[in-house]
Length: 262
Figure 1 (cartoon, rainbow, N blue to C red):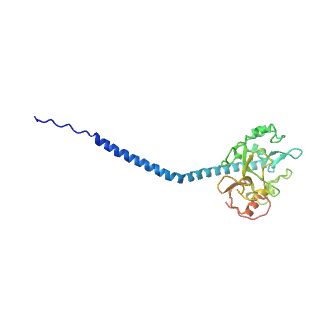
Figure 2 (figure 1 turned 180 degrees about the vertical axis):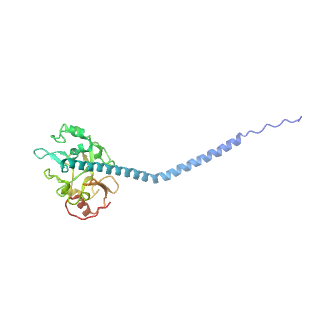
Figure 3 (figure 1 turned 45 degrees about the vertical axis):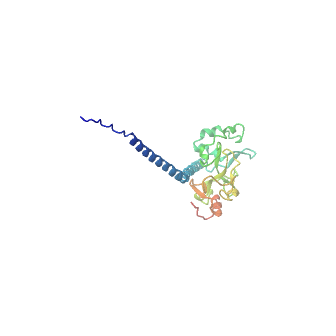
């Protein structure tokens, strides 16, 4: 039997603490590295994300216009002509615009039937419908309160969409070709969807795209606007479109020969 007692084994706690300390230190370094990398990459990724969202909104805007273009054709099939810019009372005062007239052909028959067509658009009774604009009339990229507002307009004038209610257009009138003549444009300043007096004039439209922050042709899309042609097709037109080409696609019987940029 040994005269000496064996010394108790030393605890490994210190070793464990050292290892844990090293592990925690490495973990902090890794997390710090990830945070720094995210800080560097996030600003680079945001434009791509924003661009993808805007591309989706622009596509939805194009789909809205295609639905309106389809409704235009359905209206023409039923009436033999396109809707007038607006209807009038016996004194020639505007009552209701083409958007209201096309409601039955956009699956909004009930809304159409509730509007009193023999009263002005802003009569005490009809005012209740000002905030009930179908979403199809709104561009998803539009900002601000868009309740009851529209982003789309026809271009009115003797050379484009005639205001004269006795001179309705039909397919046969558009001698420049349905695929070469614009029916619907985006407008810079939204207006009440029922207002029959706020379409864009031919002269204003010919000034260009996004040249004014307050009126005329324009949108919040980057670099241009969507337009719908009389054949129902929709194209994105650049801000830099040649003024002569822009003027040509806005007229229906100008006889111009041009290539429409896509």
